[in-house]
Amino acid sequence: MTKLILIIVAVSYLLGSIPFGYLLVRVFRGQDVRKTGSGNIGATNVARTGSKGLAIATLLLDALKGYAAVAFAFWLAGTHRFADQVTTNLYDQSTQTMDSHTVFLLAALAAFVAILGHMFTVWLRFKGGKGAATAAGSFIALAPRAMLVAIVLFVLIVALTRYVSLGSIVAFGVAFPLCFWWLGPAERITAPILLLIAASSLLIILRHKDNIRRLLAGTENRFR
Image (tube, rainbow, N blue to C red; front, side):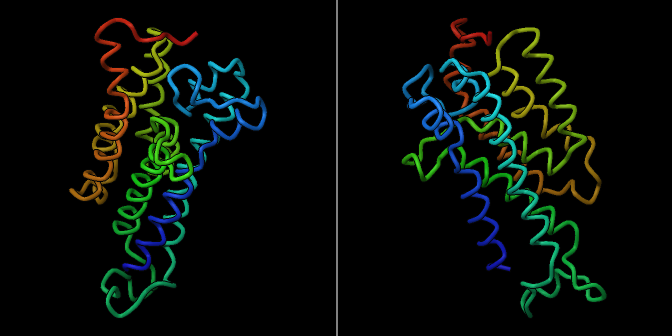
């Protein structure tokens, strides 16, 4: 079990840490996105370089790496290749597959680590983005129904206020855990899984602390 967890953590972190925004702007515009606007490597700041195409690509790729991390965890934990005598109690003896609760718990761990990787990427001296797009991709893989509600809420907030940060905080930092608790299957509504999902969402809120200050002060930039 330890080996399985270490592999999922390592792969999820490395996937999450790929700084797509930085790489795309560096390759296609010869600029360092960290010297533009907020200095963030996410899609919103990439758009401030003058290329909405690169911003859209950054958004999709950042979401995809989060989705890929969770999908990998689901696939790997769903196999029996890492079963041993210590962890056989986690497996259905008739099928030699890990029980669904444990698989989902490991997938939730993958989501948390992928988001952490985006925020603290090893490739940029542990300075990264705010994790909203990566969280969105991870959460879609974890709980698509709950995430659908969160995405609709995000779109509505951004459309009405033009504040991407506010949409991210409310939808992914606050609404998603509540939607998961409300819509998730009963066997997945357990303390360890809820704790990992809440921790993932809390990361989003904490990384937006400067945005929260600007929102309260009325100085936050609106999306145009």
